[in-house]
Amino acid sequence: MSRAAALVRLLSVAGRGALAGVGRLRGLPRRRWLLAAAGVAGLLVLLVFPVSMVVISRIDDNPAFTAAHPLPGRLQALAVTGALITRELEVNKWRANDPLFLPGGWLRDMPGFQLGLVGALARFTGALVVENGAGWTANGPDVTLNHAAGLLKYPGTVWKFDTRTSWLPTASAEKQYRNAQRSLDEFNQNFIAGTVPFERTSQSLALVVEALTRDLDETLEAVDHHLAEDRPVLLNFAINGVFYRNKGRLYADSIVMRELGRDFEAVLAQHQLGPAWGRMVEALATAARPKPTLLWSAPADSSLLPNHLLAQGFYAAQARLQATQILAELRPSG
Image (cartoon, rainbow, N blue to C red; front, top):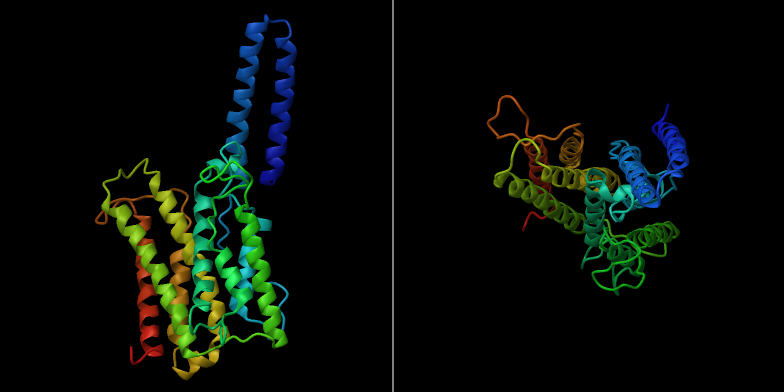
């Protein structure tokens, strides 16, 4: 039986029980009836929310993920970037901005993963539209690609209302990211048609790798900051946010860099960097792979319990080392 079917069955049983309880409440005095009704409602919330959270929570870290419906001549890295956005919005559903009156508002792992993922995609697309980047033209950054890069920087926690700025309805994160995905697809279609350039040079690739090293630096800083604090091994609830945001970031980087290596295959071959690029992607994928049932943050010298952040940071540091070496080859005079 699937998780969704189990949820439907459980809610059906709970609903029948609630109706039976309402029938018994009719014979009670009004004050007791109100108290009993509030108790039944609270019980349903306590039952429904945890079960719903289990059903909707999904850390989609498929390492073989690719963009569907390949088009000849398209840019693979941009295609998979758009596909990752679509998957999180339309298939898994965006949970990072769910309010607290929805089950998704109480999740921590999945929102952290989604925020890390989009953060990495934002940094990648931003590196394409900086000066001399692959999306830079004689008139500045390509308008469509620059539009997508800007929208991906939008805070992923904004719902239909953002009371921090106004009580009026605002653009949700889903709307902004969906528009970014459309802009990425439009740019790719224009590239296939030959109406927009995409400079596949050593310099433009170096800018992306440089952005990747900054992303990995933030990952390692998050690990270091958490480990530097005196936190208990058990009941350490903060570790989930750090671990899964890093995981989303590393996962997105591994998928996009894998496809970018195909787009820049000629440049990598020119510098004999194909094997090094493969090792970097593998280190990113390895760092993003763990999904432990229970996260532990034991001391580094513990022989009994693991420290999942240390393991994550180790492979992230390996990926950064590879990226630094690649960057040195792409910029020999730097």
